[in-house]
Length: 173
Image 1 (cartoon, rainbow, N blue to C red):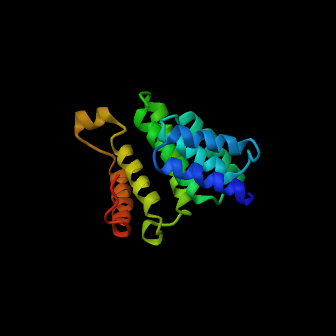
Image 2: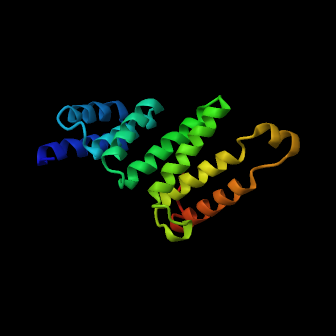
């Protein structure tokens, strides 16, 4: 990107970070016209869409970003978050399960498949922990009837969340 294009990209990102999502999308889409394969633009446009709860468009742009650059860990983390948020809103158990599986896959990629104690990516650790927390209660019938949860997912959730707290003790969402 040249300096003028980069300045517009930074303006779009500032709008996104300040919650002016529609305005950010306008700027990102304007930039897309001349550089539709740019991984950074696609990742930040996708993230803006998930913040508006448009998980279909978020997935589209974030997938495009990681396809362009599979080592773009931030994009993988935000694609994971897209799937986690989608899972929360899913009513169909099968689709919810698939969204959770996809979220875990992308968060693990964002962490470069490292164990929690070896990673310093606090945001991804926290959100992966939250995904495992969501997975704990996936089988609601078993939870209600037998008062049992998925112990393996519980352990994973605690491992990731505890490491995230070590790294970012004041992180609140």
